[in-house]
Image (cartoon, rainbow, N blue to C red):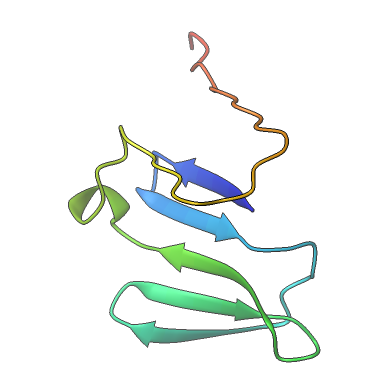
Amino acid sequence: MIFEYHADTDMLYIRLGQGTSIESEEVAPGVVLDFDGANQVVGVELEDASKFINLSRLEFWSLPIADLIVRERVPTAA
């Protein structure tokens, strides 16, 4: 699972697997599910994410995490 935050659009994308999205459906205002060819959810898009989620905190509960990769993208000077 990969979390991608796009500050320029305030959009959080949660990639659930390796599948390729071929169809999307807005299931609630600002919540879009992406589906693969087998109609399985492969991603979740949350628009205006910072209005609903505390993006400074991420918690894991009862997950069997063998390898945790933490990356922070530092903005480059323009």
